[in-house]
Picture (cartoon, rainbow, N blue to C red):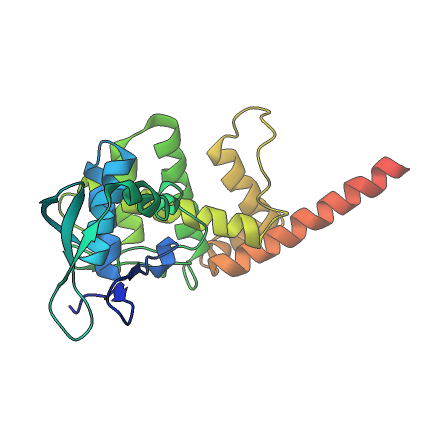
Length: 254
């Protein structure tokens, strides 16, 4: 796979510019995989960002020259170019990768794990029943820190997945679902409102309430609802949540 060239030099060859990604969605599949591996093994965030900076740019430190480091980076149409790097500039370079500390709200994930293809990143075309199972697993991860719940979530998101789910793969699965939830919170603001801190919500109750809202209490429709596209189901639930809130506001005014 051809490396993305992120280093360019000015016409006089004295100024180096590094074009780094500004979010998860800008990473290639190879870069995303490497980022997840780095985050999974890095004990300190700054070490992870340094390792990632070097991986993304191809930067290599050769040796120290006085107070600077002689380094090399790959460039378009040629071999690596050497340059002197002032160590005092490194913290600022690492700050451009601070977005790594937050998952963001645009879902991205490795296309495959162990040969198993992933579900669509934003869950378009995924059955509502599968979405509910994934959310149930995710809540299990949050509440019990269960590795088995993470592995179950991985196998739902990568149908047919077999074998050991490595730590970086678990991290990728959790981050992917976190991004999905952030996306849905933005897309369906009436349905997904920030918690008011009024206590935990039982996942089974929430799932049953959502199904009941869509079926109108008709149990014969449950199979049809669970097989509905996730986005269609959430769109309807969001509309119902908005209508319920509007109704409650009107009742309070009377």
